[in-house]
Length: 293
Image (cartoon, rainbow, N blue to C red; front, top):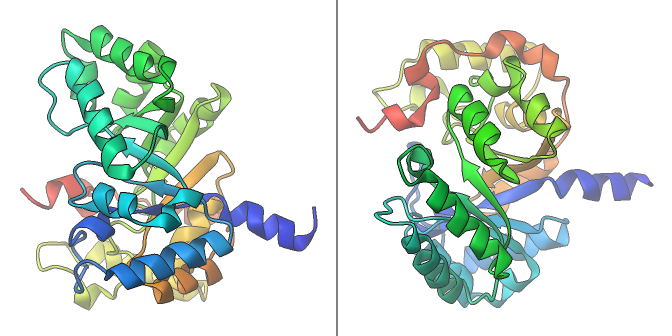
């Protein structure tokens, strides 16, 4: 493969997260939702560079409707998720049909369980059977689970054998890497998608710009690490993920074409072992689920 082909293959591992398209998402987001013109420019530029995957969810505001209204998205594979609140297994089918309608699609590439609680309750087997039925009926090509913690991932993967898992991973949150689960998932043939690569943008801004409720020390250490290696925080964060060959997709939230250009320029795999000491033990600093409490 020539250098250009290798570059295309590398960039194909990047997927666009669309939470920012549908709502003002992220604790460092000062600009709100991008305009329709900006989103169109992002999609066109991404496609030109070999990016062909979009990650969305019903919980992402108007993201699904917006994507379904744009002809540019016809060139992309799409992954969506179940509703965040399901009261019965059959709601999975109704929710997927609603998502398909909003996205103007006959089928989707991936359907992920958004919250894994339903797979730990009394009806867990029934919920999984309904997901499998969605695949059998040709509404989705793959089914999987969006997960947060190592123990729950190991348990649910053993119980249900999903085709795809989506997990958080970044230099401050290396639990899945350090405990060997990424390699284990890959050996099982499970497709691994990574979210929270930039920790809602907190890894990319200066510590002085962080929300008041976040501890500054972990992020100050992170910036010193980047400075010591002469890397921008963007190059370091993205390079860390791309340096893990088992990761199939890294989901990146983009709010402008300019941001996308910076992202593409920074897409260079880095030696992951260099980041061993970056992992943060303070859960509050690395877990956005705790920031709204």
